[in-house]
View 1 (cartoon, rainbow, N blue to C red):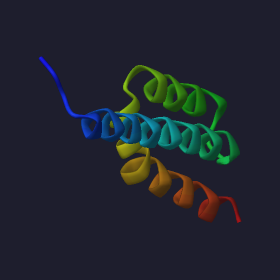
View 2 (cartoon, rainbow, N blue to C red):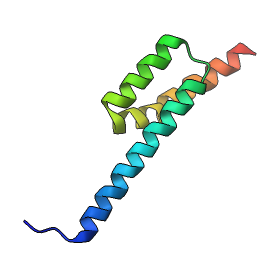
View 3 (tube, rainbow, N blue to C red):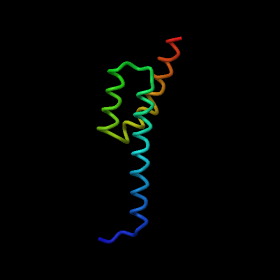
Length: 73
């Protein structure tokens, strides 16, 4: 079946967005004050389930990072 070129561009943009999200997530996880085990688990989630992992980190992980940073001071 033939698909228009716009489908290829749309898929490429979607894949690029997910890859950028995973890279952003891994960088922010590494820079976070979480324990080494928590960081490793978040990175495994990012690699195993890229889209779900990024969304979960954005919703859950960032809140945990803020509460960890707040309790440290």
